[in-house]
Image (cartoon, rainbow, N blue to C red):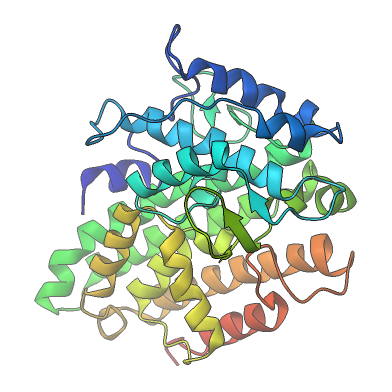
Amino acid sequence: MDATFTRRGFLPEADPATHFPFGSEFAQLDELGRNIPSLLQDGSFRTYARELRIPAWPDGPVSPVQLPYLRLYYVRLGFLTSAFINQVPLPPESTLPKNIAVPFCNACKLLNRPPILSYDGYALFNWKRIRPDGPIALGNIDTIQNFVHMYDEHWFILVHVEIEAIAATILSAIERLKPFLSAGMPGAEIDALIAEIAAAAWKQVAVLRRIPEKMDPHLYFKTFRPYIRFFENVVYEGVETAPMSYRGETGAQSSILPMLVAFLKIPHKNSMLMNHLADMRRFMPADHRAVLDEVEALPPVKPLAGKEAFNDLLEAIAAFREVHFGWADLYIHRNVQDPRGTGGTPYREWLQQLIDETREHRIA
């Protein structure tokens, strides 16, 4: 596993680029990004967007120096794309104009991902530290790009960023567990590292519980949730003539829980749910998918683990899912009788299945 993951979790190897270099042709996208929350208040936004001249990303391989700026380009155009398709309170648009579709799809192709704003662009690449030497944690982070002016959206994104930062501890412990798993010998070292993972997972639960502190359920549902919804039958002009459908931004595109499921070998039953979760991997960064494959290939830890440590980690995962279920109920289900989440799935039934099957994996 690359050392970046053990230091940063699934966050980028360095803090995201917040703006393009002064004088760059791409700097206009920073101004556009800052203006999107205001532009979306005007019913003529789509007319305005159709006339935009967006600089194309240069052809050729992407260097390590360019990568943070390519990710920022994806964030700016991803927000613009979802703003255009799902502008509130208008009906969804069925065609993404060529001037947006072509540069956005080219950027997504370079990043080896589908052409829609996903969890990586909405959260993983969309934050900055207030004090550069401070922690990646609530109180010291803010967003780079938003759909609305309300702080509720900032908070929603930033809660996920801190959760992702905590995952570095989990990945570091898994990396240090590898030689013990290969040896196949139980011992105190294994339980200590599992306990380290569990402690980090419980910290993530505590952060997730903070969602209501600065996010109003009605504002979430009516103001910015529509912008992260899935696309259905959208034509990308200049790219595809056939309508395309893509899953919207959702926490199911985070690599943290799939990584923990892979590490503990939790046997979730084959179902539409598991097909959905497998499909969500398409929307993760390619190097995250590689980490999931690596963790899945590890020998099982359960036969080597002590009951207390193993079951505590399982309970932390189940608790995280229960808190998530509660927020889905509060922020979505109570506002509308729509069984689909932003990713386009019947989330309530599926979330309960995941909770139950997690606890069924405990050491008796």
